Image 1 (spheres, rainbow, N blue to C red):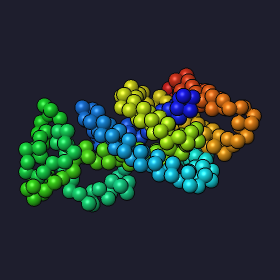
Image 2: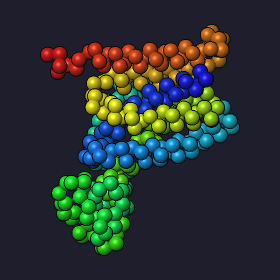
Image 3: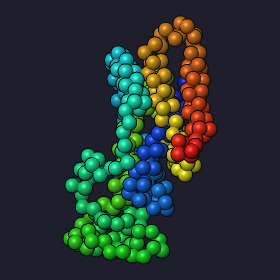
Image 4: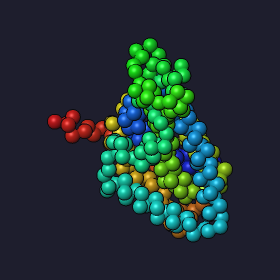
Length: 273
């Protein structure tokens, strides 16, 4: 039970960082709020499938090559350092290789057409307005396409980017939970329940994401602690006893509480003037 709870807290806390990126994706594609639920629903379904595959692969690797845990640990510590010290701005997705590949491989509509991810040129769906009740605007890409051509809408591109970002975050979070337990069932179920709450968590925090500016450093510190725990498990058992995971859970809670508290109590520089 303790291992599951610790794994769940690790996964849930790391999924908060995913929310920042999802908000950026929705902003970049100007996804209408009425369709954000739909993108997140299918995004979570896809994430569960992809993570199940990654967890099975990770379990097989650990069973065959136990030393790979140390590789996971080093990767987590490297990721933590990168989050703390390397600033990067991903708000402009124009040059994203996945997005560029999708645009090269598939014909795209210029506008949203209802809640559709795919439309056929010339069909009734390709002549739907962006949102219910909004004016119908011409779509030059649809008009130029050969009738019957299957086309991706911007909603599909937003879904592709949400799935891509989840895979990137899973590369960090799955090794992190293997630091807590090697049981594939516990690893998967903690992932499942953390992801199932992602939609509600996003809509709960979407309006105040910018306030949590100290959360990313806190999450980086969580990754560092988990990576260090993975490297020193045998020593921690000797020093702290069999319940050392309880201390890990308490440490994670403390780090997250400080990150959230600092974000809420310390105003941004422009607000303190």
